[in-house]
Length: 440
Image 1: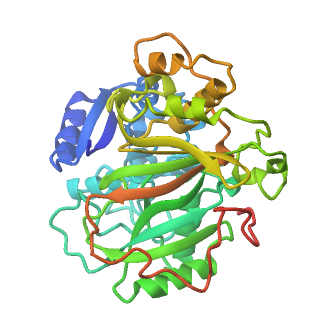
Image 2 (image 1 turned 120 degrees about the vertical axis):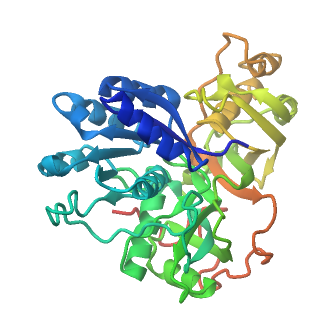
């Protein structure tokens, strides 16, 4: 498994870029994957290299530079951007924030503060400096931002907070995916807003995976650091009292400071549901499955699925490439089985997944099961060296993130030890959730 936060640096001065690179890579948890003195090139690197964060000098955003960032955020809304600014450009903060930038930090800040800001913004948080110059006083007023005390790069800090692991259910139809996006309802944003109401300050929530728009979860894992006065049972009850109805906290448990739900995960599992019965088109089913409403050859689908376990280059089954991490995934299990009396279900577990990989796999296997493609084509696609194209991806509403596994239980607590019994089994597991509503 690959560790490390990937960074693209954009600054007009080569010596400054070198200094920034040394500061960030000294943490041993960050890796600079691209450097440039041009904002357009920086945007291109961000689209090509898929970094966790783009760190860019405000001077490069003059003229058309800000437009390039807006275009980047439109095409790649998940891109996190941190701007290096100074006291001479305080008036430029408003348009920068409106462009979708998630962080600004003054150039007079210390190396340690820079590392903290990069860590926070790369993880999907927000860092807006309250002052850009010690002589100038307050330059920009923002809500109090919590800077996580337990993120893995902040070495040498004294921690007094407790980190909690959350296991979440959510109905993806209500959200534009997991990750924070400007002006959009997301699961991460809803959980952070709920924590803000409970604690009175902004708390950064880290997730195990970035599910897309419309994709559901019955086993998403997240973590957050809170004051020691909170217990797991109290946090579960409080969150379930204030979260929107499309999200339910199944379990809460304390974990060590170094726990990171994404980097510590060794396996993730998904399931995809297809309604082959006519009643799958009912509004009480179609929100949580692909209502195909026609029969499939389950044996043919399983013959295709049996080729998946092991290590393969899934380049053909990815919407966008990941050149730094490669396209090889190690699948531990994959197969189809009946889904109640409604249809069929595909289940798959792997160490990692590429963007829309499961949906492309399902779409291709469904065409094989419907005799629209030959069974031999699956092996050709998995070879990674063919110009053969996959079928269209299956629609998102049938996909569920069901489980995230870790090498060892961080605290030895049994699963569900701190579940909230007052909420029941709400969520899109087998049907519509009561009182599910779209978040504003």
